[in-house]
Image (cartoon, rainbow, N blue to C red; front, side, top):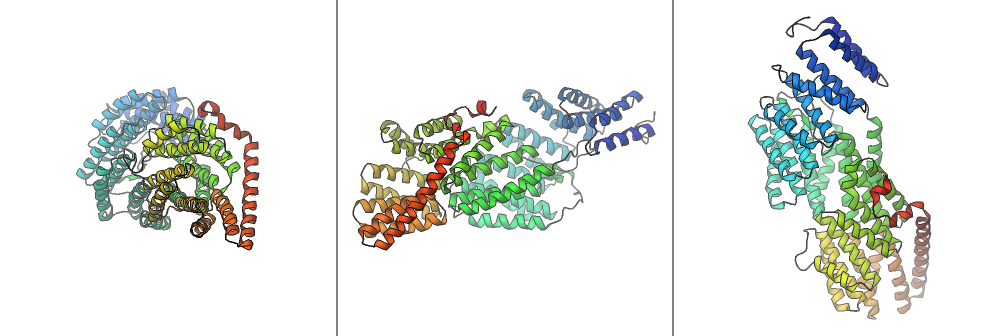
Length: 602
């Protein structure tokens, strides 16, 4: 047997060649690949070969089979042996990295953490692996919702990257930290951090795709920050930059030239994933702004791209001897695609409920349930949103008791302040419609008082809270008070182009003026409400507006306009009725009574 300093023995190269041939066959012939690698041990190889073979076996078994315990055994041996071999970092740290993934998969987080900490401690002279392991441990803390520890690790990584001269990876660490701080709502700390990120990104000169991917990451944070704050108009310049940036990336060719600094051997996301992410935030913006046809268009594009990505996934990189480029995802590649898909569906479901396509929305809610069934973590992260969507569907089919039950369940499942406020606002609308839940209603309204200590900084949600107050005052016959609240909603929604809130406020104001016999002023409100509702399109506001226009034109003596409005009202009524019957006839309609969706899904 040759020493480790000499060239590999022919038998070793032959077995390795056969293993690689079987691995890359279509389909992969995993059993034969494993047999070839196991045969290496029959020759009593030196430690370097033994450790590397254990790593290769562990990797193949982990990625290609369900025999996780056997994979774990090989990786533990690789980690143990490699620590005794000098200058054997790739095998040592890759074994630790994959082994910690298995521990996490088996919910043995307390085993993964010390393993990663030790690997981080002994990898400080190996920049690539030190950074990669820091990212991995930060990701583990993030999945556990320990964002403080994750932010601390990312801060350590940013400083380490600066010391080793990698401004690119420093930017990745800093942007990742900014993302987590946005999740924690530490807005006062996020602003200076994002300013620093912007400076680092603009000053860094390197691979064009890497530079543009940093800009996409930076702009994604800015856009989502604006959207979380409900600032639909203010976000437009950033969103436009982001869309231009992703177009630039799509024209660039992937260069295989590796950076000189090993700490630069990272990508944030593949550009195909970035493209889906840009579609996603565009959908979010279009939905908030009330451009629902645009939201539908970009949802279709994003879902088509997602389907291509899922179809094209193959067995890759599973037995590589060195890992040069590492993707830094919030979750691993496949789960993050599922997350994108769920968020896209959540938004398009809300759009369909507005545009009068309840049956389709209900089927898509069921589809989201099925997607979440595939991943307990995905279900945990989206259970509150699912119950919220069911609550909105229940409102649309006038099942108010079920809506209340779904919203109440959703409130119990979320700790997210913006979602909590959204749910409470919709639950308040249910109580207003029921008309006999005064104590519960006033308790809710006190918690979302837009004039005093509003729970979130969202411009959109605060405007919606004013609308809810106006709606309540209208039902109580306090018209002057209602007008004050609704004018406040109009002022806020006009400032940020919140078209749907504008349409709802205009038609309600028009209704108030009609009740007060001020027909001219009512007409001045209802006509633009109808125009805006048609542009969105919002079926319920169109129905409401057409009914008012019919009565208004009768009162004003405009018989032809009254007849036209009556015909429109009849058309909208028929469309909504047909959709209502279709939705309630679906077997998925039974979901409205299900308060434990996970047990239903499984």
